[in-house]
Structures are given as structure tokens and as C-alpha cells.
Image (tube, rainbow, N blue to C red; front, side, top):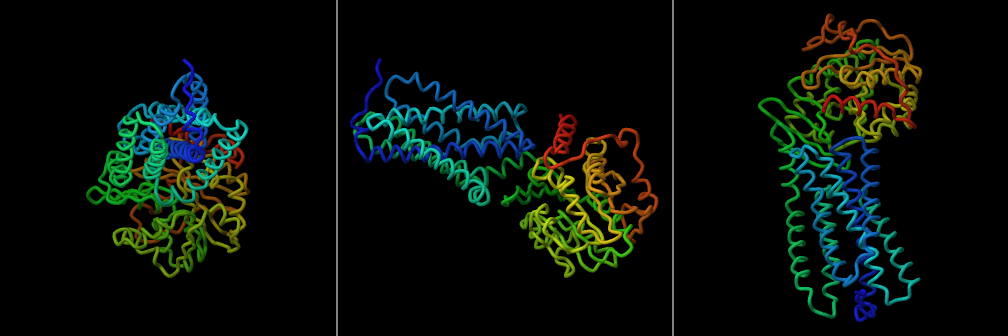
Length: 509
């Protein structure tokens, strides 16, 4: 049967404007769903480059499949376009919330993720061919150029809105629901402009979809909290999304835990082991550690240990996320945990990207504590590269000692020793050591200096973990953690991120 011709609908200039506006809207919404799926996959599964690449590739393949299948639409393209819009609104709008909630409950989460991406991509692929058919009553060249123009402009709008406005201020769940509402609104506007009847089912479905999405938008915080309660083993007492990460605090009895993007940063029951091992072997090897630089460490726990050295006069702490440093400065229970270090008059807090800051900085430091998160993706992996360490070397005073937290030499020995290899490629002398932290297991650190590293360290009084005996044993590596050959981690290869991801992937499952 020949395709139905909607001349009355296509003939109206108002209808043409509405259809072209819908091209802009559907393009914007479609790209937002793609970015949401890629970001969510990176957040939940790690390795942002792999997740973005595979999700975008799957999405584009599904779009192509949807476009190809549009040739089999023989009648009533307007009705199908409206139904497609409502389906995309429902699936795309609810996708982020659904995936967050189901992540801790579904064993084969990747299968679910890519099924959702395929479904959204397929439906989005149907949209533009259907729009072209609805506009067939106009000049073909004008139709093609106009539709593609609005499509590309919508893609630009989405690519700018997503990182600059939507993620920092709405978060993933609310963003998904908001653009689902926009998709459904496109369908409802077209239905309202129809000069004919017979779309009662679509209008009823549109009202129901919008009502569901509005409810989801309003209840997003509750859904987010419910998903986090299901994900964490301890009760969640605080959760907020900053422009950079999801910050979650849990508490069970006297054990307070901080998670950033789902990754454990510390447990209050044993964090003293980690932070004593991080700070004192470095500062204790500096004759006069008057000016100390801390990179990362926005919780103030490393700064607490630094201030236990009586010769410290100034500390500069550079941490990307002001939400973290403010939280640990202004919340009484957290300020007690770090001993009020973030309010100490000797401390200067700089909320900036450490990679950029180190390249701009001109001060000289007697000791540097590098307490970055693990290299789970390339945005963090750049902070473990040869170029970063060379930039850091410019800031060292004579005799300065650097310490770098370097992941587990037991779980990921290749990644651990790659940090040492990379520091050496940047001109440092290194010495590795490790400590057992119950919440993390065996954890590794690397001392580095432009000159010879002193053999022993002066330790402050009152340590709960480190004394002369335990401090010496930290440098003993059994065979399963012994040094091995590794490549240098550079900006153009990011070998550390791959090595870290592969090792922890094997360990966890």
C-alpha cells in the first residue's frame, strides 16, 4: 500500500515550523541520552575512554539500523513519529534512573546497559527519516538543508549544555527525566496541531508519559538515595553531586566512610594507618619541612599528619573539588576527624586541577604529598604521567622528598611499579614501600627525590601505627609484590590506566 500523504498537515507553514523545531529538539534530546549513557557507564564501570567509545559506537550503529528500517514504513508516518517520540521519552528519560537503581541488583549489568543504548539509538534513528517524509510537501533541497541544520545545531546545544549546566546543577537522573519530558512535549505539540482526529490513544499515552517523567524528576533525589543505599554496605548519611563527582558518606557504628564516584577513599577505623604511612616516611626524611605541598587530600587527613611535624610553617593543599574541602572543613564530625587541619591558619586551600596548577606554580616546596585517587580513567591517569612528574620536579627545593600513593602492589603490581618507573624516567630516585590497611588491603607508596633518599626517617611522637620497627619493614617486598619491568606512563599512552583496570578487573571478578 502506498504511503499516506498528509497534504493538509504539511501544507501549513506553522506545521512546517513545528516539525523543524522538533528536529532541533529530538537531536538535542538524542545526544543528551547518548552522553548520559556514556557518562553513567564511565561512572559505574570505570575506564571512561572505553565506555564512551563503546557506548557511542553502539548508539550510532543502532541509529543506522533505525534509519535503515524506516524504509519499511508504508503508511501513516505521522502516527509512527509521535509514537516513536513517546517511546524515546519514556526509555531515554527513565534510563539513567533505571540503570542506577538496577546496577547493584543485576549481575549482567553491561547487557542491560547496551540493550538500553540499542533501544534508544534505534528509535532516534527512525526520527529524521520520518521527519523528512512529513515535510515532503515542501521543496526537497530546503527540507534537507533545514532538517540537517536544526539537527546539527541541536547536537551543538546538547554538547555544551551537558557539561556546563546539566551535569553540575541537575545531575544525571534529573537531566534524563527533563529531556524525556522535552521529547514527550514535542509529540504533544504535534498532536495539538493536527487538523484531524483519531489520535486519542497517542494523546492519552503522552499525558501518562509526561506525568511519569515529571514524577521522576521531582523524586530524583529519593531515587538516587535509594540506589546508593542498595549499593553500599553501610547506611548512607550524606550524598551530594558536585560538578566533578558524586560524594557519599556512610556510617556504621563508629566507622565513617567516604566514597567518591563509588570508590572508597577512607574508613575512619583504619585511615590512620594509611595517612601515617603516606606522610611520615616522606616528611621524616626532610631536614626542615617548612613548606609542604599536598596534591589531592581534600579530606584534610594528610594535612592533619603533616601538621604533627613541628617545623611545618606553611602547607598548600591543591584539590579539584571545593565541595569536598568545604565539607571536611565545615562539618563538625569530619573536622574532628582531620583535627581541624583545613581551618589551620598555616594552610592554603586551592581548588584547581592539579595538572594545570603544577604547570603554573612557581613556589618551592620542601616536601610533596601526592594523594590522588587511583588511576581509574585517563582524567586521573594524566596525574601519574612522566610529563606531570617533570613539571612537579620544578617545584622542589634542594633536598625535597616526594611521596606518591600508588595503588596496591599485591593486586596490581604492574601498575604499582609503573609509578616508580615513570618517576625515574622523569629524573627521580625512587624507593617503594607498602603498608597493610584493613579497608584496602596491602597498599603501596613510592618515595621520590631529585637526589639521594635518606635511609631513615624521624617519626613524630604519638603514632598509632608507625614506629622505628614498622617503618623499616614497610620497605620489604615479598616475591609476589617484587619489582618487575614496566613501561613508562606517558600522556600519549596512558599505560597505567590500562594496567590498573586489567589487574583490578581480574581481582574483582
